[in-house]
Structures are given as C-alpha cells and as structure tokens.
Image (cartoon, rainbow, N blue to C red; front, side, top):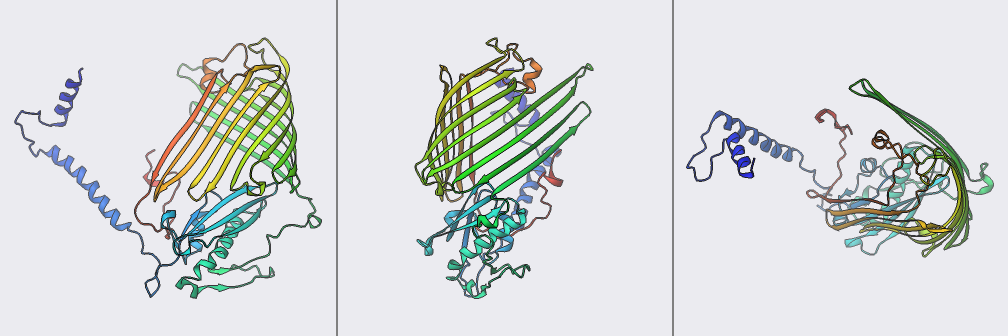
Amino acid sequence: MTPRDSLESARHHSGLPRPGSGETIAPTPQRKRRARRLIFPILALFVFADLAAPAPALETTEGTEALRLFLDCDWGCDFTFQRSQITYVNWVRDRQDAEVHVLVTIQSGGNSREYTFNFIGLERFEGIDQRLIYTSSFTDTDDERRRGVQRILELGLVRYVLETPQAEGLIVEFQNGEEQGEPHRDHFHPEPNNLVADPDDDPWNHWVYRLRLNTDFRSEDRRDSQSYQTSASAGRTTDLWRMGMGVFYSYRESNFEFEDGGTFKNVSRSTSYFGQVIRTLAPHWGVGVGASSRRSTFLNLDNSYRAAAAIEYNYFPYSESSEREFTFAYFIGGTRLDYEEVTVFDKLEETFTDQGAYIAFGMERPWGEAHLDLQYSHFIDDFDRSRVEFNTDVEYHIVRGLSFDVYAGVSRIRDQIYLPKGGATDAEVLVARRQLETDLSFRGGIQLRYTFGSIYNNVVNSRLSSESGGFSRIF
C-alpha cells in the first residue's frame, strides 16, 4: 500500500472528506460522540485546574510575604516532612524565586553521615551566607535523621526570619537533654548531642559493624524467581585512618516453562571478600592498601585473589570533598585467577600484575552539580591488555523552572581474559547469565525538566498518594 493509499484509507475510516471533493461533514451520531469525547476531557481539565489552584502565599496583616525558601537536597532530607514542620516560610520550587537557597551536601563516613548546610542569601539577603553541619549516626532511625535536619534548618533560618514579620512568632528555647518531650514545630532546640565524640568515651573505638540478610521471591504460572543476599562488614573511620573489611554472598535462581512443556533454569552465584586500610598523609594526600577475593558464575571465576596499593592527591582539601574534589591517583596490584571453565586462551588459571591511574572531578554548586572520572589500566607485561573508562554526569539549572541533566559513559575493553571458550548459549544471553565479549561499551541518557506555574510549594496533602499509581493505574 502506498502512502497515498494509506491516507485515503485513513480518510475513509475516519469519515473525513477528500480534498476538492466538495463534500461537507454531516453531524452524524458517530461524529457527535467523538465531539463529546473531545469536549468532556477539556472541560474536566479546566475544572481540575480551578480546583487545584495554589493556595496563596503566607502573608502578614501588613501584606508582606514570609521568607521564600528553596531547599536543594537530593536525598536524605525528607522534603515532605520538612514542609509540614517548618510552616512559617514560603517553600518555593525554584532557586530563582527564593530569598534563601539552602544547598545540602551529604558525605558518609565509617559510622556517621555528615550533612553540610550552605545557606545562601539572595535578593534582600544577598551576601548573608552561612554554613552549618549536622552529623547523624548510622544507628539513627530515619525519623531521628529528618528531625535533626529540621533542627539545623530552623537554626540557620533564624537570622533571615528575624528580618520578616514572622519573627514575632519565634521563640528560642534551650533543651539541656533532661527533657525529651516533643518540641513545638516553630521552636529552636540546639541540643548538644552532635558534639565530636571523645575516643575515651567510645567503647567501640570508632568501629562499626553491619549485618544484612535480604531475600526476594516472585512466582507466576510459567515462571518464578528467588534470590538471597547476605553480607557482613566492619569499618573504622578517624581523621588519620579508614579501615574496612567484609564479606558478601548472593544467590539468584530463575525457572521458566515453555509452551511445549520444556523448562529452563538459570542459577547465578557470587561471593566476595575484601579488606582495605587507608592512611591520611596530609590535607591533600592519602595512601592505601587492600586485598580481595571473588567467585562469580557471571565472570567464570572459581576463585580469584587480588592485592593492590594506591596513592591519591586531591587538589582541594579533603575536608571540602562533600562540595568539591579533584583527585589524581595511581595504583598497582597483582591478581590470581582460577576459572570454572577453560577460557578463550585455553587456561584454567593464571596470574598477572597491572597498574593504572585515574582522574576524578566533582562539585556541587547552586547552579547544579557535575561529576566526571577517567580511568586507565593495563597489564604490566602486556600493554595490549588494557581498559579505558570515562563517565560523566551533569545537572544544570538553566533558568527558572528549567533544568538539564545528562550522563554518559564509554569503555574500551581489552582485558576480558576470563571469558569461557565455549561462549554463551542463546538462553544464557537472554537471561544475562554470562559476561559477553565486547570491545566497547556505551551508556548515557538526557533529561530535560521544565516546571511552571505557582512558585509556592507549601501545602502537604498525601491523600490517595499510592506510589504504584493506586486507583488510576492501568494494570
């Protein structure tokens, strides 16, 4: 069928007249039903737009708006909770509409998580900036963390809110730790529970231990799957040392039944052990040694062992790594491999040494964030056995409401010495049971976001907010 035939057929089934035919469109019952189907959604859209009109901004009796706040926190802050607790400011959706921009960066340590709050004054508060730090323990609950974030947010907002009519409603209290009652949402409680710990008061001497057991299963008439993962780790982090060790085990099984009654079973296992010791040399330098062992059906590894050492230089002080870093590193190591199956090079075991270097850059700023890294490694006795990897991720806020995200990565791979000689069956390829031979690997994505409308984001309403789609979901 030619394009012209397709067009004529479409006109025939839709009831549209042919150009130049002189035909007119009669108001048939079918066309009336189509018109109603078009009109009703449009009317419903206007009705919902009217019902969903944003609530007015907070105002005093004098008509002065409350402080406009933009919280820039990718994760770990519980944005909905903060909006429901801090109700004396206007939460806005974009930095361009804010009087105060709070940029939150988060860095995880051995037994704690450090939140750095950068309060950036805009408009009438231009140049009035400050930085506050909140440290939470890994033993804290999610509720304890979000209340800690709330406390620091409110402490930092005091100097700005004092310049608004809402200052009349502020009350400053001091809680000495004896009373643990629930504070009023608009009160500020500088609790002394986040002071730097004295090692003499720590019976664990900064060691943190973690145990995890996870299982998952799914079942349908003709397929089912189950998986188990367990891990144990120990770590210690101080200004001078960072040490860690652990073990991880994973088992995944999938079963399929075909139309002809045949079945297929896919099993994947992985076990790994690791240990590292990192030493601080100076504000810009660090050195470390590490060892690991691994078994993996995906990589054709029966037993494998590796020991390596590395040295790293950071152009910026490591104390600023939650906001910016520019690192250069060199590493060298030796690896012993025992294979489950004979490899493409007719080997069941082999040993090699390798070396490499990498450059990594990352920063978080009010305009967005950027990260990139480049790594190169090769076998010392065979430069052709090498790998080059490049990754980048950029998020940029272009103008009010408009942001652009892009990530990309490319790898040139010349070191797949572990591939089995027999290759992979079609079934193994479909279920990703084996690593496949490849010279190049690409990945990437682009996202453009545009938000417009009301600048305010004060109201919290969680009715019928099922994350799976709830009652309006199709299947």
